[in-house]
Length: 269
Length: 319
Image 1 (spheres, helix red, strand yellow):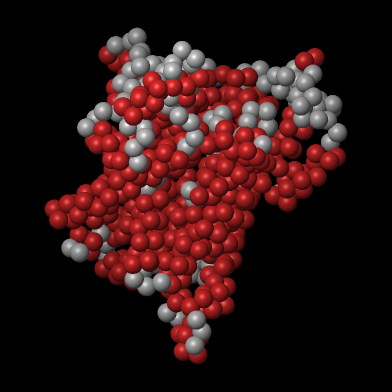
Image 2 (cartoon, chains in turn cyan, yellow):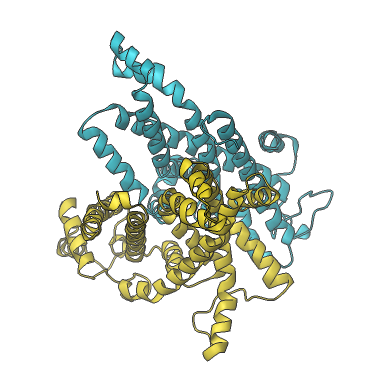
């Protein structure tokens, strides 16, 4: 199902000819019809087109935030595990500090302070995209870092790594050639869960009205706009929220399945 | 025990300082000037602005400004809101109890449901109950809180008309009627928060209990002739609570984030909605103060969780 959603979102706007910003007051708030398969919103804009366009953005933000958080997390975790002495301890302290930061308030604060400058320098959409991705990734690397550090610490003392050390491999070579490939499975599982969390976080931001600019129809934004018309246009909220729910459900399923397949320590009764 | 408590409290102070430093760095780096509006006002000459800046210490080096800000925060002088000219501390104190009430009750409710369900599902793994509970937990975990809130509003307020849509801080009823009205209006926000947490906790409790349930000492307890209920309660649950408490502590920042969203949907007048409205109104002192309060709440609850951890696991206490 996730594949279907991704395909629809990537190729849909190319196939569905209706523009996302076609305002048509004559067709306000219609339920699903043949001309508008998902109905229209309060400005008469076609919901299917907006959902497809918004899907691209939501998924792209989710993936990009995951990439950022995994890169930062793996680097920090690996360095913390492989170095001895104060560097390791101070990185652990830094991770714990970031873990106790309240994420959503900080996210809102940073967006509030920096959105205008970035929009001025890079253009509305691109600027917000980079800001949202960096901040989302920057507040989620901690669990990946902890996980990586734990994996690395346990793998570091294994025999094959010690053998590599005995043959004279530098620490960098040990890390990249031996330890990293073996911890890749848990990192992949954590990355999958990170994508789901990032998509939900981006939708939450748009739902609060503070993510992308108001004419960009991400799924959270669509849900936000549908909030005021719940009694007469329930299909609007259901489509928008349902899309988020199904995507996150699929990603969680995949993550769970990956964890079952890749984690040998699972208790099998 | 006292040493443990003292040590945890002392460790919390550098964390709080670190968080405040990060918050202040973000504010210092941010563009925008508190006197930006004044600068565009043609009636105010440039020298007046310059002397105002010097008076408020805006030209001092950043670390000096941070020290002043920190000192002011600790003395309880949190500034005045740009929008309403009310003291920020006063605003926050007005709204904090509501948030704590909703969040606290929802977490207690979530734990009260998640613990029995998770334990029972793990004690009878792969049974019908287990499959149902896991499936529902999975679904509940993938539903974002704002979607659940919207769905509940659609169902209970619009279709059925049982529960009020908007939360009122000053209810006109008194006595038992007030109590009943309060429960009616806070039921939906509490259910939304509790549902999400309950789903994620059920899954973790189930896997934590599964880890413990097949260890040797449990089999010994059963072989000794202890009743099943006592075995589960005394041995399994107590030992599986340890990773669960760690998980609860790690999720506390996310819980407060969820509370922000819920307050927006149901118009609950708590500090979350204060944060959003002050962001939309560009009210910087309130935004900084509320973020700092959130950070303090998170650190405070982490300390509580650590203390609970020390109480549940005797090995930590005697460290």
